[in-house]
Structure formats: structure tokens, C-alpha cells
Image (cartoon, rainbow, N blue to C red; front, side, top):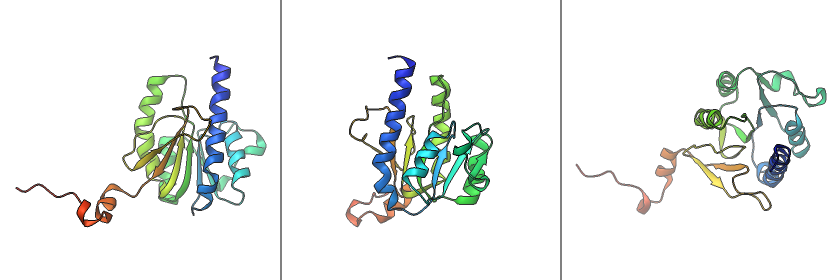
Length: 183
């Protein structure tokens, strides 16, 4: 597959996943987060899918099409490692949808980024919200969902945010709670 074919397949998968999540996200309160503005294509698609919703964007340096630049009060500028903590302080764990499409052609660098990116984004994710990513992110409370019809396996990664593990254990029926070992 050529790099162009791979790009087209990734964009189709991204669009199909966002479209698949629309009805589910519509039922949830909270803002949407776009992590990585790039040219602004996905931000523009989110505005079209979710008119009237607050969409916050993270970007190192804005270089998007002028029609696809979010308002200043919805933009977290700078390195994502630095801007996520600012967003957590401002928004908390309220995001109904987080979409991230960060990375480079360097697989090792992407894997290293994924190790800190998932836990960092978890601080912004509302319980019952969704995360859509171009790479696998390992977060204990995120449940991996199957790809929508027509999206190839592992082309894009969908997650549902579950309650924190400690809270899930407390909410489990009495017969299903784990017991501490006798000492």
C-alpha cells in the first residue's frame, strides 16, 4: 500500500468512526476535544457533526486553513504535554469525546508518546465518554470497542470510558466484590 493509499484509508477510518459515534456522543453532556489540529479538517468535521457543541483544540502551532481555526478561548496552544494539564485545570474530566491523531512516521516515538498520552487524556475524559485515537492507548478504565462496520481492524481505536476502577469495585454486586486475602 502506498503512503497515499494509507493516508486515505486512515482518513476514511477516522471519518467513519466519528460518524459512528455521533448518536452516542449526542446523548452525553460535555465538550469535545480535538488533540492535534493539523489542517483543521477533523475540527471542521466535528463542527459539522456536532453543531453548537463546545470543541476545544490542542495544537503546538496553528497552521490550519483560516476557516478551520477555533476561537482563541477554545484553543490550547503549545506542546500537548504542557497544554493538557492547563486543560485539566480549566475543564476537568468532562469531555464527552476526545479525538487524537498525533504522531509521526516513527513507530518507536509514537509508542513512547502513547504511554503518557493515554493517561494524560484520561484526566480529561468523562465517565461514559468516548476516546477515538489513531494509535492504541493503554488506560485501565477505557474499554476497547470494536471497529464500526467497514473500518479495518486496528486502523483506528475506539474506547468507552468506564468509571474509575475503585468506584467500579464499590458498585459491584455484593457477591461479585473481590475479597482481601485473609492474613
